[in-house]
Length: 495
Ligand code: GLN
Image (cartoon, rainbow, N blue to C red; front, side):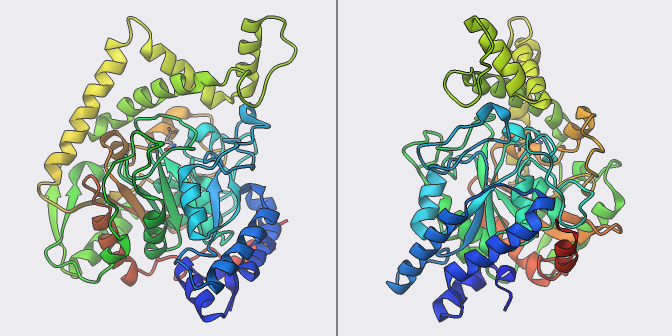
């Protein structure tokens, strides 16, 4: 039995039977991380001692007969979710030396379930980007082909799951940062409804868009993770006071009477033919299982990129004002005056993409431009939400591509921010509207890179996402494990 190849669900069964122990499993993962991470660069902090202590605690939970499905599950956490006493960098020089004195609510909940945290994983600086290249720790590589980017900004989370350097992970999704890297790395990733998961302890990027979401090798594991982290939290006033259903209950076979909407705007000229083929193939398989396919329209899709790249930078410019060299992390020590210190700290502490966003954000919020840009963008946002409201009168989920093309090479688009922004065209709308979205593997390109199917559902209808995804997954050749990066080659390429 290769311990690092077991899903969270399989691990949990192995623990219950006494076939494996959390310490054995944590050690196997740490060993694998040692071998493969130096080249992959998914982890930026490995917390071996803490992981082994948690694994020991998990064993006690099991021996007391209090095991949950997540007890002893080895996880990776994106480095913008606070884990008490472990440095939290957001992949930025700005936060160097910052150690959070508290746990994010999602961490508190996972700790209660008895999970094991192996470490913190790489990301685009402050989650701004689509490739994990904007990191002060250097890019993470795509386990399917080390010359390619894993997507972003939760690229470390997706690559770690795909390379079996963890059994599941948490990421954050402001405009696609869970779904897009999940798609590029061939794993499952979910962005919950805005308000479904508490963001207390998540470093803010764009507060009206940010959500924490799980990534895992399969749909069931993803449901287990959402079960644990979802629900109201008095520490986050935007978390919704609604009961959390058991998402495992949605993983039932059969799609009779289930309606899947195909948005015409998602199947246009810019879509890579291989992506189109894989996505339509997956939709066809859902149809064969009884789902009804209906044509829908999301007419304001083409404005999503423009609206998002005004709203997100505007909120970022405000959120990131707190990094002034006084309260957190990095400070330029050579300055003589306060103003000089602010300026020098922020110029040296932030990378170029973050600086670009702060400048765009400050510009669109400034007097005279506010009406022309920010206000217009929020109006477009309402139109995008109304598109979805109309669409969900006709269908239970909407299906389409996650990205216009499979992963790009490291270095290929980093100097062309506009091209990078445009590649987010299919993921931004769900964040602007607030609805949940998911990526599940549905194909491989001729170059051997994963392709994801995106599913979107109405507010708080994650159950419908799980239902469609589960039925897709059980018959798909591309489900992780049936198709996975060459583990042997990965170990050989390592070092
Ligand atoms: N790629 C998008 C951006 O750069 C989304 C990032 C995210 O979801 N955190 O803003």
